[in-house]
Image (cartoon, rainbow, N blue to C red; front, side, top):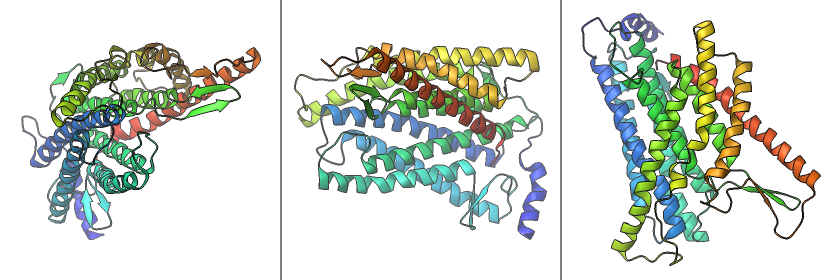
Length: 411
């Protein structure tokens, strides 16, 4: 209790910078670490998509495939960096170093004290690392599979998502602290560097969501097969479109997020087919199907265009609300309604963008040669659209809550 009082008395000075001063040591440590983590995240993105395509085109002949090496280098690097920050911050906390107190750290197992984002990221990286040998053992027992839904694939994916959410907390807490500084940082596109880091990280998470966008289950009702891949796209996009506005309080950031996501997908699509061909040639590995060789696909590279209209709708409504009230934040009810309506363009446009990319691009896939009653199809379409709108509403609701947390959290 005494220790908490000592730390809380320091909190009045903890996050303030006097005019003309440079960043303190604490701020430098956390911010440099945040940008290093973003580098690891971008590396992991390339590895994740490369691994998906490697399984599809080449297979899985061993654990240490080139994409696996890239992925686990990223996971190990991010995990070790998070561990180092946790140990370093714990030591500084116990030495009562200014800016390292109960207002800027969280307790872990009652002994360690570290920034919330690094703590969350560390647990996510640990989960992904634990999944690696278990996934390898699973393959040895049951053979090669390319499905996303294998148990230890999901364990690794879950760890990755937890880690990436931790990265958002890292940037967001530093941005919240920086806003209390009397100094005015340089801005890019109306955002500080740390706020831009938030947008870049969210774009990376959305790109991660796209990694398995066509590996979601197909629901069969009668003679109609229904693709469920639009549902995670709707929920993920609406979550982060709303969250990025709430966390930065800048109108236009939803559209900026989709622009950054587009840059991500173009870079990934330029890199991955080339990397597969190069690695397969160097190692002399044959393709699973000799007539299928990976190459750059324009439709996948520009898939985020399907989300652009929804982003513009959200930004326009935020702009109108800001002109009336001075804040882009709408009520929870309005946010949920906007999320439900903004889901519709994603559901309608995504199949059009992907129509040449895969036979599963259409959401509704009637069984060939078997007629479908018009009334049945109308019912299925209406129910499916309502479910998609529900996912959009859920994503918007979560985006509002997470966005507010990221806006104000300083830990």
